[in-house]
Image (cartoon, rainbow, N blue to C red; front, side):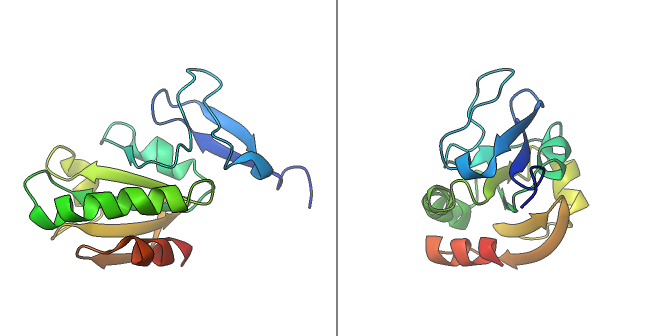
Length: 145
């Protein structure tokens, strides 16, 4: 494996900085070199219309987006399952949440018609989607492709 393939580039959701992380250390709680915020904490990351594109397009890891809203009962039921899946996938995938009510541009871009909807992205491009609340195991399988 060449030196370039041994390093992953991750964008910080807090400040937008691109970070180079050795792939062997992705599960070791890397932090942003600029602002010190966790990059892969094993917890879902809240994204907005303002930072969605820079974070997901810059990720070399698969990204699973949970489109949700606070008033949605199934969304609230799935939230702990999504968090559990984020922990299980720490260092292997980035799990993010987008409140579709507060971030209509991103929800519109993906044509979100019902929530919760999970969308798997590869370098910012949609490769799969499923609708409805899912248990953690199914979310992990979905992330793996």
